[in-house]
Amino acid sequence: MGEAWQDEWEGDARDWEAAWAEWVAELGGYAKRFETREWLAAYLQGLLGGVERRNCWQLAEARGEAHPYGFQHLLGRAQWDADGVRDAARARVIHALADAEGVLIVDETGFLKKGRHSAGVKRQYSGTPAGSRTVRSECFWPMPAAGGKA
Image 1 (cartoon, rainbow, N blue to C red):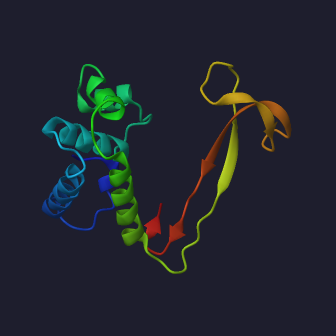
Image 2 (image 1 turned 30 degrees about the vertical axis):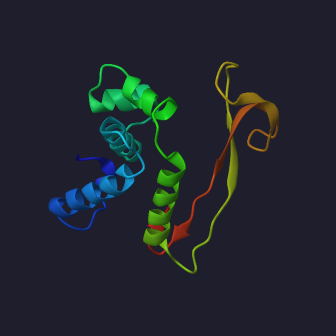
Image 3 (image 1 turned 180 degrees about the horizontal axis):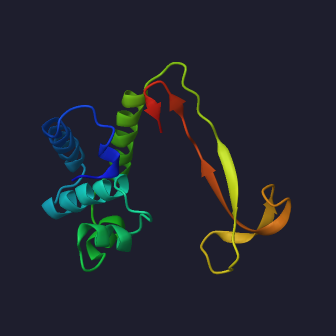
């Protein structure tokens, strides 16, 4: 694997591989077909990896695939329980970062855009440039806690 997100792992590589295999096996229960389980594991590895833009093409290229069809099939047509995977991932994050003194911070930020063809871009008020400009709004929900941040 050797991804950037492994740098903070406290333990040896075998512990990491065993923990990853356990996680993938747990999530594999949300997909009936072997191929879907394989693409789900690759998708999660890509999301956690060092790819700058996490879209199907970028994830496929990082994995060495010639085209993004496997990821596109997973996200668009494959039969799997996406809500179950989301809930399992959420539970794992909550368990890892559990802190009674943790605080959830909501931050809505507007990013200036020059073009009119980007997804999610429209003319709206943004406090960033102080006025009505073409911006893309994003909402961040960081949660600093003693065990890390999400």
